[in-house]
Length: 96
Image (cartoon, rainbow, N blue to C red):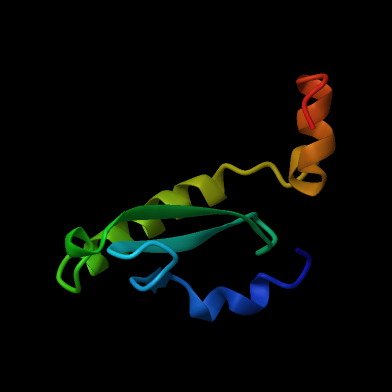
């Protein structure tokens, strides 16, 4: 999946309560590196009744706070960010 996550910054957080499993809901926020490139995402999935309109803003703010903390500590030179499968396989031989 290669496209510009940076262009999607204004669309996050993303919340959905009509997904693949009936009665489930989720919300996700991106994690950016120091160059503004999306390198990961944090998400919460739960029962739709627990992620209602009253609680959603609180969950989003908590995820954003953690995303910001992670973003500040990401090493932009970490090769795992560019080629995660190859680097994971090197550390865990035989896993593909």
